Image 1: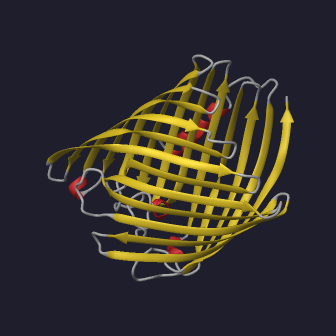
Image 2: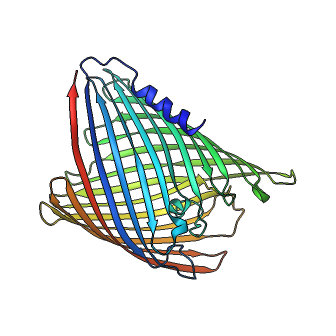
Image 3: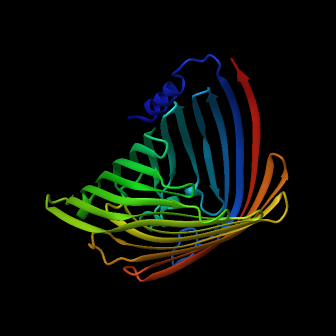
Length: 388
């Protein structure tokens, strides 16, 4: 599917349906920032540069009594003072639609975005040095049905394609399906069961010229409100991975892997403070044909000093290994970012943030870090509304 046909299909979907008693709105925003990072590529030979970004976004919304749709699109314009080869203009487009009946809810989302491979390097392959543009197309439908007052069933699916501008990474496509049953045991506690399956296929060169991975997951879920301030959520289960790989010479290799998967989070919210902590273990394919098993710890805290001033702190630790045990590479990532936000006008705010990053890789025997300071200005235009 070409970029033009993908975007055209989204516009077609958003226009489907009667237009009587419908509210339309248009709004926009402009987010701009200037920053300096002393190690752009997270390499031992440090290269620093000032970095400027501007992100204009337009949002179209359509709302009726039982359904709503939205379409947002724009550009992310990147400029580097000392590294002009990294300059980019990346478009994005996002569509969301929801239909609600007495017992059912349908949702559909579709995205197209271009970005730098370095933007997702921490969660992907850990490669901050290679500059590649990745074009991502995805579509995700879901359906939820209220069986009884306490029980609900949901089905969801997603399909995504990623295409890279260089041969350093493998183009890939992923299809996933999931089903979930949820029961409200009490006013404070609900839980259920979830099952999912996904397939990832990629084409590259060398040892992983062709990759075909099937992943399955069975888990139990729970959400419990401990008090008016505290709540906890958890998903704990087992996963299984089947992997089939073919190299350039035509040699086939089959591998299997099983283990635990979990995602646990707790949050507390008071009148002035918001705090959350999360711990997870996930399995996901990477852009190099590997399959990552990632353990991650997240912390976040924010406090409202005044009605217009907030301070915050986010921190994370991530450890990534091969889910198939076919690589000795272990990667540890640490990030720490304090920030302060000042909303000095109704539609205008400024954010000052410091970001520390560190990455240690056992296979390459490297331990690198970077420091970045970013000043951001955010403007939102309320737009116009009309009904007919």
